Amino acid sequence: MKRTVNYFTGCLILGSLVATNAQATEGGGSNYPMGATDLLVGALPPPGVYPLIYAEHYKADDFKGNNGKSLPINFKLKADVVAPRLLYVTDKKMLGGQLFFAGLLPLVKLDVSMQGKRDKESGIGDLDLTTGLAFHHSPQLHSAVGVDVFAPTGEYRSSRLANPGRNYWTVEGVYAASKIDPAGINWGVKVMYDYNFKNDATNYKSGQELHADYSLGYGVAQHWIIGVGGYAYKQLTGDEKNGSDIGNKGQAFAIGPAIKYDNGNGFFLSAKYQKEMSVKNRPEGDALWIKTIVKF
Image (cartoon, rainbow, N blue to C red):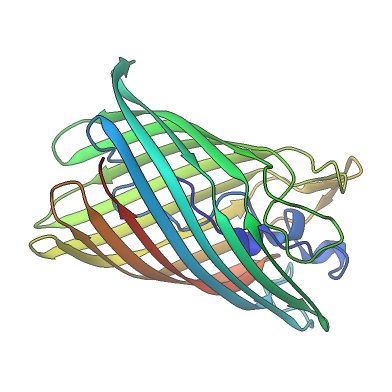
């Protein structure tokens, strides 16, 4: 269970350049970074403190409208993000689960162009705080439940195209599960529901979002797993502007290859590429992810 940094779409402020009915959620983005999780999403490690690093490069040059077709605008977006995360797995038990906490504060670099205007910005993004319970049903099957709270700590100005923060709070409920088999089939899924609060700077309230990250892989050699992964996204309620429902529901699907190395002693490194498709009211692009973890 984690949040990394899809700030590429999450930090665009396109309202001044794109018609209201051409985006879903404010700027066509989300607080959660879609597709960031991998095979171990539901399998928490033994008690201890674990520093994780997420790195992502994302680019898009297409913004899809409500019918899934490209909007007639000159649009480009590049984002590079490095997100350190600290995971603390306790030895405390609640309701049969293992209590854990985590915090993540991303470092974001954005380059956005729209209709002849260009904006660059870098800085600290929005803070993500996590608490949850991990369950170990067997040596291979694991799950976790939890809540993420995204706090608007990143810099934000409504007049800018590129903003490291989104300027509103989000509360996210999470369920994750994983099957781990170093010599066979591996899978992981993380299902999330987001409730977004209002952006006071723009009086805009993004709709509620349902989305899931997924991974499927096979152990091909000792310590190595190859497979595919991505995400599915659907906005369930419309956006609100000045208290009025204006619709604008987004959707997206992404898939791509993935590879993971795990030395069996608490260190792993994973890399994956994802291509977005079936997009409505959001940017459509591709992302490269790298993730690693080391136990103290």
